[in-house]
Length: 95
Image (tube, rainbow, N blue to C red; front, side, top):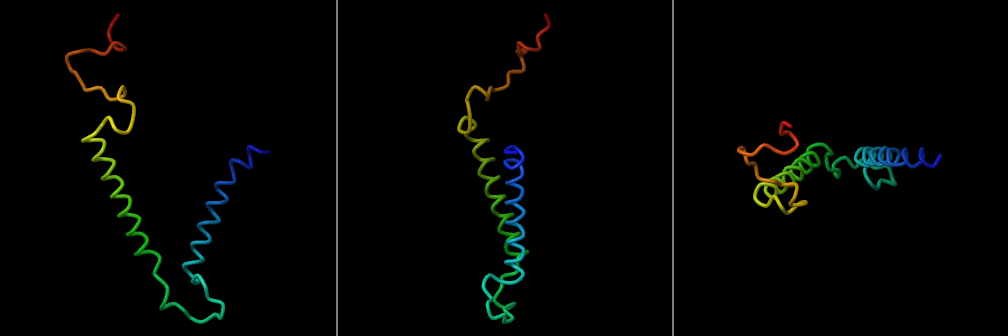
């Protein structure tokens, strides 16, 4: 029972967040009088999509820069071995 709850809870929370964001941007965040407030709302698609794409591109550019110019920074230096085409690795040498 605990495993089922533990497995399903993140999906339930994610679904509730998506529903919340969808209705928040359709009806406005605070409209107790029911007044038409379409002029005050920010359109969801153009602004947030552009912001997400720019954030993704900046993050990927930063990670690419780090991995190309400073390959030892984000991990164990033993995992990064410069290639040497004149030496056959031990695990594929014939017996």
